[in-house]
Length: 242
Image (cartoon, rainbow, N blue to C red; front, side, top):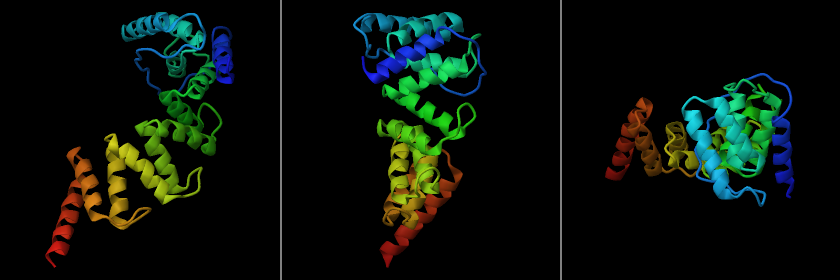
């Protein structure tokens, strides 16, 4: 059994017994088809059925029943079930939130490479309301989720590089991660990235790319981007006519 598998097993063992804790947080339960089990039994097909049953019960507002199935899958090392069970507890949707154990399960899921868990665990470390704030550690987890294309993680990491928050200020890296978030349709990232191409902050000045991202943001209803797209379009036309 790997180190992360041991952590997952320990997290679930603690989650299945103990006392209640406080509640907080705003994580999201996700639907999954399957996730690799870390033990020979139960197999992936049974884990998938448990997860499907858990999701159906959760959507029917039968949270306690859903937790039974999520914890069964989590005990088998399923990273999505670890995340979902932790999320439900952190949000306080169950009668037995067991907050410390929920955070442990979330960290275990993150360690197993589940991007939503990596982002959520980073967010907890970033905000410091449930666990002690640790910005450098938060950015490490944001980076792992962002590398898998998680848009919220990419935007959070980009903003921290932009501000020098928990990492050395680096506009080039900020632009790199804003583009990941912008490609996924994040309107805030699209606007900031456009402004960076307009001014040459961390990237070469490129009015055409600035216009591209202002237009993308404008299409989503960003009023400032609508104004900027017209302004940059006129500027490009004026330069072309000279």
